[in-house]
Image 1: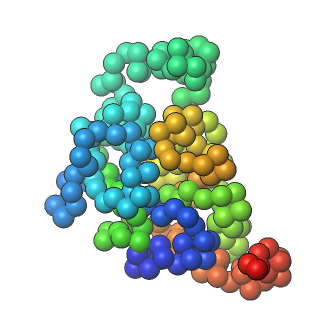
Image 2: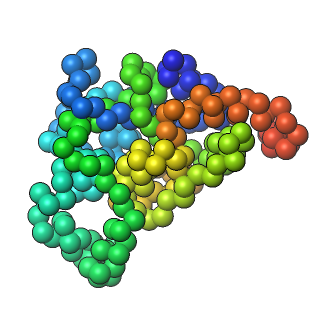
Amino acid sequence: MYKEMGEKLKEILKLDKEPVAIKWSVRIPKDIKKEEGKSRFCTKLDKAANGEIFYSTAQEEECMGGIRYSGMKDRKELPKNMQSGAFLVPAGVYKSIPAVQRSWQNNVPIESGIFDAVIFSPLTKADFDPDLVFVVCNSEQAMMILHANAYDSGSHGLGADSGPICSSMASIPYLTGKVTYGFGDIGSRNNMNLKPEDVMVTIPAGDLERILANLSEMKTKTFFKRNQKVTP
């Protein structure tokens, strides 16, 4: 079902990149290969957008944010400079530790100790029911998703700020069930193959069928007919 929805999403929005299916698993998957080597959570999204299917555990996560916000490890298990955010000051992300700590109040982790793995796949190849669908797109495509989300529900998406996308575009939409949009953070944009104009939208998988139906219906309406570009 989700494979077909992935194809439909790509077709309607004319996406260049594959939407990514993400699933948290309480046990190690038996029919999906484990990621080879370590990478950051944001890099895993890039890998899946490029066609890879794999699961990842705490052992395959090399970023403090990824391991914490995805629920693979408790914050207290990390070194003190990671817990405090001190490492982000010389990196230039924040000016001081208090600024880090204030910012982190908005980053919400999935509770550790619940899940053993996170599964990543192109949505069009997903043989599982995902929790989230992560989309890299341009601003107009993102606008269409947000309009489709509001079309029948009146619900507004969450706007992500400069927090790490392992929180803003993964754990937060997972925990809130809200369509979320953002621009990424400096860490993710440094570690993903993104164009300057790329933005991100995460859709809770349970909303995808509704959003696709709304996208199709909206295209028949006056405002969105005007918005459709004619290719010479």
